[in-house]
Image 1: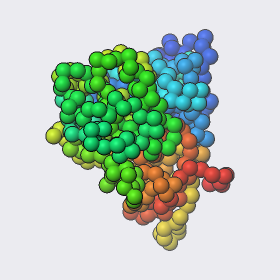
Image 2 (image 1 turned 90 degrees about the horizontal axis):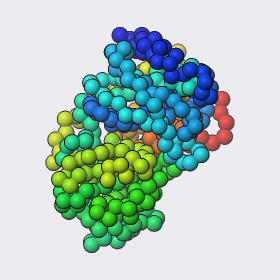
Image 3 (image 1 turned 90 degrees about the vertical axis):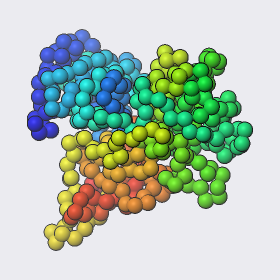
Amino acid sequence: MTTRASAAALLAALALVATACGSGEGSTTFPPESFAIPANADIGVGRSRLLVGIGDPTGRRLGSPENEVVIAVAPADRPDAVQTVPGIFTWIVVDAFGLYRAEFDFDAPGVWQVVVIPEAGDSLPPAAFNVFADTFAPAVGEPAPAPQTPTLDDFSFEEITTDPDPDATFYELSLDQAIGNGRKTVVVFATPAFCVSAACGPLLEIVKEVAPQHPDVDFVHIEVYTNLTDVDFAPIPKNLAPAVLADWWNLPSEPWVFVIDETGIVQARFEGVMAAEELTAEL
Amino acid sequence: MRPRARGATTVIAAATLLGAGCGDSDGAPVEATVIGVVIAVDGTLAGVESFVLRLENGSDLTLVPAEGLLFDGTAPLTHLRDHLVSGNPVEATYTTSPEGPPVVKAIGDTGGTHDD
């Protein structure tokens, strides 16, 4: 089935859903030129969270908690196998832009399509995204990699984090000390200084706000880059921290938050954006 | 060490169009600058292999970065994912290639207005 035919088939399959969901009584609608943007880098087979932005060609990001939508997905080669879930809007920068999120059961790898159905008006055109047989980063249920990572025992703040206001407790334990020590671990992979836009900065701040409420959980921040104090440092691949590379966490993007259970198994994974309640629900 | 089953790069799933064409009438490479919104990025933290811009005319353009390319000359190209999330447009200068997608030699935040 060609991409165009697949998209048309998905929209046809969603016609009844749109009629039911978009009853015309709601007010959410998007301009005609709007489109959906799948924002994940690493979705694997199984239950996973899909992040979807709504934009227009000028770069406006649309959507808000008040703009209710339903998100529909289906494999491109099985457009009738539609799943529909209400989208939950999460601000990245409050009152500026955010993403909708919804969880789906991705039962097969390959190309999938997502359609955003507003309360009123037309559904947005289908947008394609990949579901992988094996994710880049560890999946839920897999053992968490446990490399030795730098801590304040051996390094200064400046050497191991670009957070301008670091929480010292996030740099007390190496990952190989935290994982599997009988306590849950929350690990944040982020690089505050080199995430130029505001899109990823809030994630570390959210975790820092949640941490004090859970003294029974270990929190670890892993800076994405290393050699931070070298005079010729630059945020280039040779300076990526070993923990994020293929031998360990193999991250395709940043930031990420992982929740690891007491036995060292990945319990939850959050790519890019995360609401505080999503994290607290895992703790 | 975690076993890694997938080492190859991913394929951008978007139904993109190579809107730039392959060069001038003689097949010689053509340089152009476009402004667009990032709608897909293919790669890892170690590098971006390709990305897709949705242009102001509604068409999609798949681009590959030149080796060593930095965003605004300073930031890693993974910054394109920030633009995918935020929606802030980018300006890309590329050279067409008869053998594949256009190759980007400069990319950064937009500044001023442009006629495409």
